[in-house]
Length: 283
Image (cartoon, rainbow, N blue to C red; front, side, top):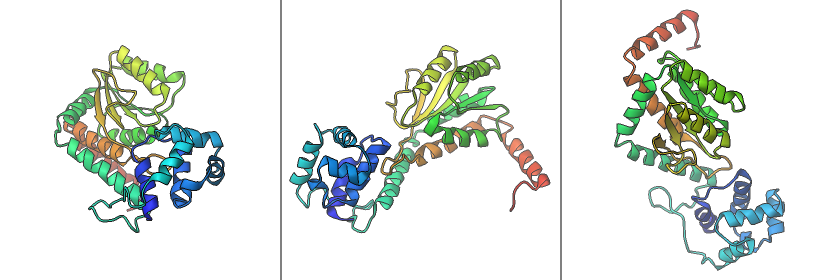
């Protein structure tokens, strides 16, 4: 990776960019040597976006507009802000895909640090284990995380109800869970946060459910006082977010929930026996 590319990656790091804005960022990294001299129209053509998108991109980075961003790039000294690898070595030869993996590894390290205090996860596991049924909510980008959790949770929890579709039926389904005896709701909330997720959680709280949320930040727009919020950062180095840390935290929550279900092991053994009888798996 050239020093110019490394400086650009450093500039973009930590900013919440839309997929269109990330496309512009990736184009600039690929054309790092030319980037300080491209007009907004030229950059828009190269990235395949509109010229106003380039302006909004510059503003998202904290500049008054694209001219200010270009001026900043021109004024940056060639040796300034050189990127280093995860062990402090120069990042020469590390491409943008490897950079994204390194960033995700750092997110996992940060999660490991948070888990040094297991009390919040243990409390969450107990709440989820005690809820009958257990609604698991995840809309749009978070649907995959909610689905993965619900798939495994159903092997040990007697009644897991997956909520991954918004619309007018969502609040009805939450009400149905409450009527059936639910006491807690698990939500996976990832950027960009759908307004429907915020509304669904407000409804769940009003209905008396304790909300446990896995979110990308403690300051996510879904957070409310009284919730049990467990943060797990997402990666932002690629065109679309990567969610290794939220997935890992979901598996940790499953482990903690199993500790609160006395018959969890028996249920797993029963499933394995039935799966073997049915020849469910190829191995």
